[in-house]
Amino acid sequence: MTRTEATPMTTRRPRIAPCLTAAEEAPRAPRRRVPHVITVTSGKGGVGKTNFTANLGWQLRQIRRNVMILDADLGLANIDIILGLTPDFNLSHVLSGEKTLGDIITRGPGGLRILPAGSGLPGVTDLTDAQKMALLAQMEALEQDFDYFLIDTGAGIAGNVIYFSLAAQTMIVMVTPEPTSLTDAYALVKVLSREYHQRRFKVVANEVTDEAEGREVFQNLTRVTDRFLDVSLDYLGHIPHDPKLRNAVRMQRPFCEVFPEAPAAQAIRRIARRVSTLQNDPLNSDLGLLWRNVLVREGTA
Image (cartoon, rainbow, N blue to C red):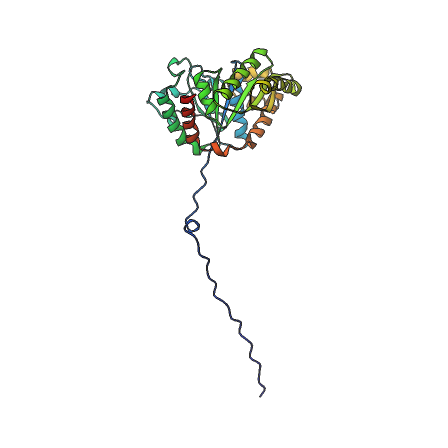
């Protein structure tokens, strides 16, 4: 009988789970959505802010972003009109305490959400600090539902325009080739930079003939700001003049929906794609903190 060699047994060391810290053991909290707040403003009225805001929002919806538009041209609001909406309630009912922001949200074309402000309402043209705080508290409750808050402000340098402009991570200033538009845009940038220490602005040139004129309008504005102000202007794009825009307004539908292949619609589509790549300022990513800081700055300016 032959002796067989015993097969050596492999000894396995027991696996020891690594020690976890309390932070590692705790379940990871879901990431809170922080909307990118963008104001669209101008120094002069009649430069196409409202139409641009509505169509920018519509284009952002086409790339699956959740968008809320706040019509902040208080007292002279008309974004609901150009979109064919007839809301039963508006921002004046919120400011009076009759309704909440959630009550007045109106569904717009393409899945847009609109916070209408109403027109011909002199009582809301100049918000008090108490009204601003009440509005802020309700905006905070809505912020996790949206990727973008687009704010269509009034024109000029009135108190509400400044407030809503400061309450944004990105400010878009709209200008046209008209000398008055450029002069008033410079005045707006001057106030926001010198009195409220804003340094960065995006510029959209509207109602131009082509890209070359859009760049020329932008350069005319930067030529003055570079000389007298400590600010940085970034060219976001141009929108060519298009007579079909009036047709869309009469139809009360977004221009980009009705005429998607028109040069102006394609231009807004390009701007929307650029906007979608903009990053929130990490120092201003909390909407509530951002707006409270606005009130502090307004009180000390």
